[in-house]
Every structure is written in C-alpha cells, then in structure tokens.
Amino acid sequence: MQADSPDSPDCLSCGACCRTGHDGRILVPPEDLARWRELGRADLAEAVQAGHFGCVAFATRMDGACVHLGTEECANACQIYEIRGTTCRDFEAGSPQCLEFRRDFGVD
Image (cartoon, rainbow, N blue to C red; front, side, top):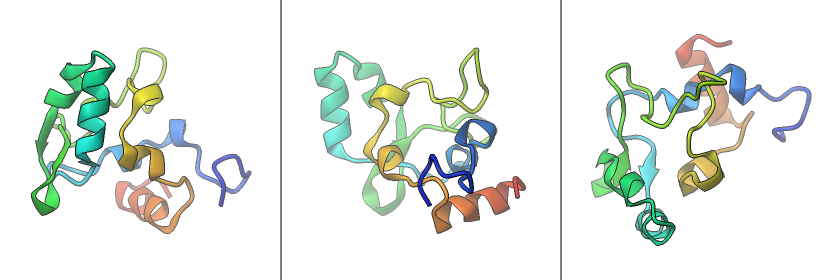
C-alpha cells in the first residue's frame, strides 16, 4: 500500500509508529548523526538514547513517544520531518509493521 492510497492509514491522524515505548526501537544510524551535524543540527545527534543491537535511537518522552513528535499544528506531525532519520524515511505507511503499531496503539 502506498501512503497516498485511499486504503492507507493517515499518518497525521495516527502517529502510532512514533509511540513505540521507552525501549529504543526507532534506531538512528551513524550516517544520520553525521548528516545532522553537517546540517548544523548537532542537537538532533545528541537527542538520542541507547537503542537495540548496540545502536542509538531517538530519545523518548515520559509517555513513550519520540521527542520529535508533535507540532503546534498537529500532535502527530514530526518536528524534524524534512530531515528525519533513515528509519523514519524508510517506514512505509500501510505496511504490516505500520498496521501492527496501529493495532497495538488502539488506532484500528
């Protein structure tokens, strides 16, 4: 399913994939850390926590949501969408993993 398909979940009404808990699931590869530093956004490279497999992951808030989730306009929008991490860029709306996150979060 493509993100623009009528059967796809609407990411801005959901945000479940960005609410994965405190366990470091949204991994940040070293290439993203370097890219953000090159862009003058070292703050993003520092806003990480220990992740799975010895990697780093996006830091989470007390409610388990990614620290970059939510803008003034939309609670489910990404504050860093234009320069978001590879894991987020590669995540496919409507994929089996997306639908699993939605079920776990109670969206569907």
